[in-house]
Image (cartoon, rainbow, N blue to C red; front, side, top):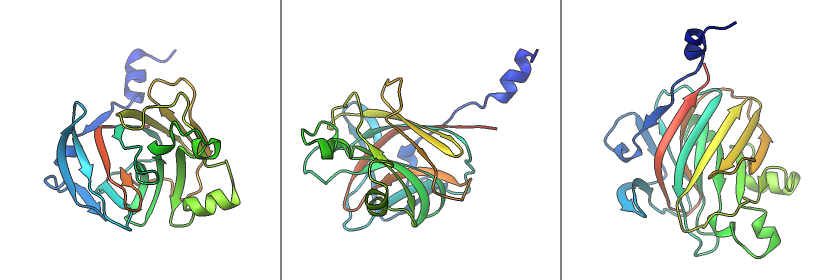
Length: 212
């Protein structure tokens, strides 16, 4: 029988990162965006400010993440439609090379069934952007989020990375909103926060648990 002490050693403690130190703490790298610290909807948070037409990425320099769990609170918006894309990045090599799971809050409660099915998305940049995945593998790398969050309020995200499977949970849902197999051959890298072309995003309470 494995002792409680051995089990405790096998369980990695979560690491909590203060995202409001972006711009002050040299560990944080920023590409494609300016940032600001804001107090909004009850949380002290980091805002990545809109810049068109670039994607934006904030990540931790020299951080090593393979398998594990990434948790964060996200705040997007429902209007304008096509104006809010935000999520988390992992296995980050640089500003152009990473995997990401992101959300389209304007689609959470869309009445149109096609838009509703495009609420959460996996991508692997640069080889597998959303356009390529939707065209060549429709419905495989994006999905609705059920139950549907309010796209104008904070929602909690938990991304479980267990190579090669990625499972995405939203709020208190027991079932994942999205399950995919990774498309990257890069098993390790940093973690960070992501926004899409022309989009802002607000982030709080980043917590990472690395599997030993």
